[in-house]
Length: 399
Image (tube, rainbow, N blue to C red; front, top):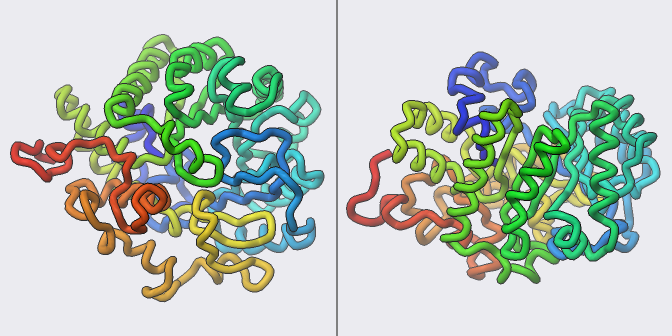
């Protein structure tokens, strides 16, 4: 993820992570992406069940599947805590469909894990929000892909927007930190100004804007992804709206997610503008390192299968019922799939291999490249930087 507000508006300086030794166990949550140890944030799809059928869902199933029971799930949390994973993100399906979700989340918080929820928000009422507050959850991210008509169309459910807004308000009223999650496609990119207006009106302090990843149902709408020119304009719009909110005294946290060339693009924009902080931002982007699938992020599925991330569900690494997550994750052989992922900078091909920003992009999304090109190590088609910008043409800008 690329912190637009952190980087462009100077809310984090390159010296800030260094004061904590860049150790994930000591870093504040808003600086975890700059850690040196890259202990994994674990996305846990605790259930396959969902009350909606969203058009871009990476999980793509809504029916009941084999799920770890409460005792098995707590054993996983014991291991994640001992392994010092900085965050466990409860997702699904829809995590609040699972009856014991608050028991598990409370157990995780008691074990010292930062607890985050990724939810459609429709099942959160005032009582549920109060419980979320009581167990000590750090954050609730609620999906909102546009205003009422567009959101309900994405979610394939009339009334989904109104119920999500009720969930947002319930969290806010319970003093639970809440933010928005937006997946950007051609079908809803025009809603971004309205979404920023909504944030200001409802005093929602955080938003993550996701680039589409071609996984699950998302693969079915890959043709709806943003073309390069529109993607650039959209990132510019996000930067502009972020700056405008900060200028009006609302210091919203804005991040773009799942397209790591947003980092170099932001840096180049700051260079063009003569921003004196450009080189400081470059250092932060180098600390971030770009895509960390299989290293700084991992996924556990409802049945205990471990994946490199939540999008790459055809690449199982093991199962927590057979060996702990920590054992699966640590010290993979170099010739294993996980080992190759951690050395992908030596394996990527095409434009990625020669890109001067490889160290701060990390080769972007291999899962998206594989779906689009058939080549696991091929170029990510969502990269919108020009050959000149990445150093493949004469006259390239100097970094």
